[in-house]
Length: 52
Image: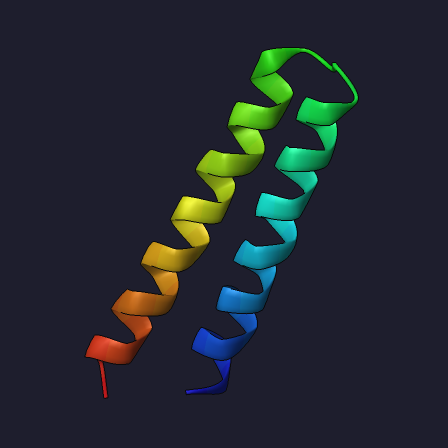
């Protein structure tokens, strides 16, 4: 239960990091990798809720 909340918070931080790097005109792959990691974190949080 708590792991899913932590993973959702991590996803929010990763999305914020992706937006920040995009605004700083960093390479596109950096922002995309942050978004992919955020998506994976949300998927993991969802899968952890299915186990209960």
